Amino acid sequence: MYKNTSGKVLRRSIAAGLLAATAMAPAAAHAQSSVEDRLDKLEAMIMALEARMDAQQSAPADPQTQAAVTEMRAAVAETRAVAAKQGELETRVAAVETSDKSGFHIGDTKVTLGGYVKMDAITARTSAGQLGGDTFLRDFLVPSTVPVGTGAGSGWDTDFSARQTRFAIKTATPVGGKTLGTTMEMDFMVTSGGDERITNSYTPRLRHAFVTYDGWTIGQTWGTFFNVGALPDTLDFIGTTPGTVFVRQPLVRYTTKSGLSIAVEQPETTVTTATGGRVTPGDDALPDVVLRFDKKAGKSAFSIAAIGRQLKVANDDFGLGSDSTLGYGVSVSGTIGVGAKDDFRFMVNAGEGLGRYIGLNIVNDAAIDPVTGDLDAIASYSGFAAYRHVWSDKLRSTIAGSYFKADNPVALTSASPTDTVWNALANVIYTPVPKLDLGVEYMYVERENEAGLDGNLQKVQVSAKYSF
Image (cartoon, rainbow, N blue to C red; front, side, top):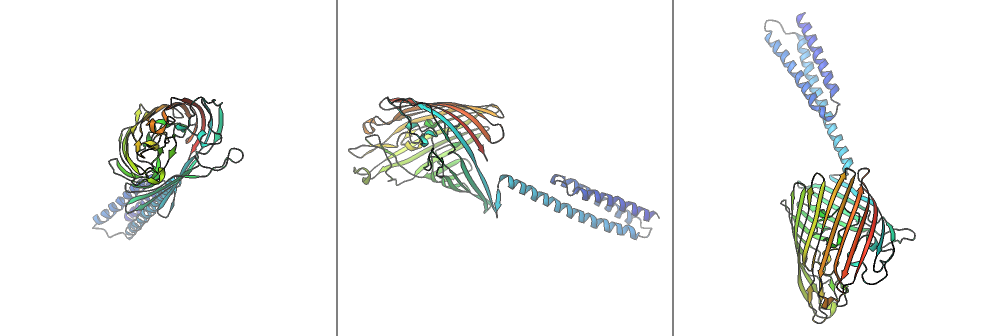
C-alpha cells in the first residue's frame, strides 16, 4: 500500500507541475526562461524518485511507480518541445512585427520606404527689383539672384508650394557576410511642369541614386566635400546658403572605419566671361578629388575636408586656345552639443576655384582672359554659425547667420558678379505629435556686387512637414 500510494501522490504532483508548465508555454517570449526552470525542477523530482527506488533494495520494484516515472519523463520531454516551439513562434512574430514597423522583405532583401510631405507658404519682398513670378527662385534662397541696384523694390509677394515633398526607397541585402544597400530618392524642386494658375504640378527629379557595400559608395549622393550633418534646423531649403558647401553629384567614395574618406567625383567647370556671364564648357578631363575625416566625441561631431580640382576649357569654347588651372579648398564643419539638448553648428570654407560648391554657385570657378584664353581661379571665403535651443519636447528654435566673400578678378569678369552676400534667420518649430513639424521663420538677406550696388531680401515662411 505504501508503494502504491507513494506512486500515486508523486504522479499527481508531477502531473500538476506539468500542467502549470504547459499553461505557461503560450506566454510572451520573456516567460520562456520560467517554463524551462519549472521543467528542470520536475526532472529533479523524477531523478529523486529513481534514486529512492534504487535505495529500496529489499523490496520488489513497484510497476506502477516505474510506469509513472516513464510517463512523466515522456511528458516533460513533450512539454519542453511545446515550449521550444512556442518560443520560436514568439521570436518569429516579434521579427515580423519589427519588420512591419521598419519595412518589408522581398526574399533576403529588406525594403524601407521614407520621405516627407511638406507645404511652404512664403511671403517675401526685395528692395532693388523683383524676382520673376512662378519661379523656383521664390521657393528658397538662391543668394546670387537677390536683386541689387536702383530698381524699384517689390511688395510682399506670396507663394504656396509643396514642391519640397520627397520620397525615398532603400534596400538592404546580406551579401558575403556584409550588407549591400541601395538608395533612390526623388522630389519636385527646381523642375518644370505646371504653373500656379491651375494644377501646380511639377516634374519629379532624381536626388539620390547610389549603392553602398563594405565602405564603398557608388552613385549620385551628397558630395564628400559637403558635411550635410552640420546643416542648421531651418524651414528654408538650406537656410544659411551663402556660407554653405552644397553639392550632390555622381561619385565613387571609400570610407574607412576610422572615419577617413577618399572620393573621385563629377567634374564641372563654371567660367565667368568678360561680360559677367556664365559658361559651362564641359571640357573636364579629371575628376574632382576629395579627402575627408570625420570624428565624433560624445554629443559633438566634427569634419575636415580638402578638395583638389582641375578647371579646364578647350579650344572650341572661346576660340582662344586651351587652358587649365588648379582649384582647391578646405572646409571645416561640425556640431557641438550644448547642455542636455541644445547644439551649436558651424562651417568655415576657403579656397580658389570652389565656385559651384559654395552657396549654389554664387560665383563661378574661374574667369577667362578674353585675349589670352588663360583661366584665373576665383578665390572665396565663406561660413555660417547656428544655435538651436530646445525649449521642450515639442518646441525648438534656431538662430543662424552666414557670410560669403569673393575675390573676383574684375578686369576679367566686369563688376556685375557678387562680391559679398550674408543672411540671418530665426525660427520657431512646434511638434504637436511625433514627426509633424509646424514652424515659422524670418530671414533677412543682403547682397552686394563688385560695382558696389546692393539690395536686400526679406522673407517670412510658414511650413508644415510630416515625415514618414
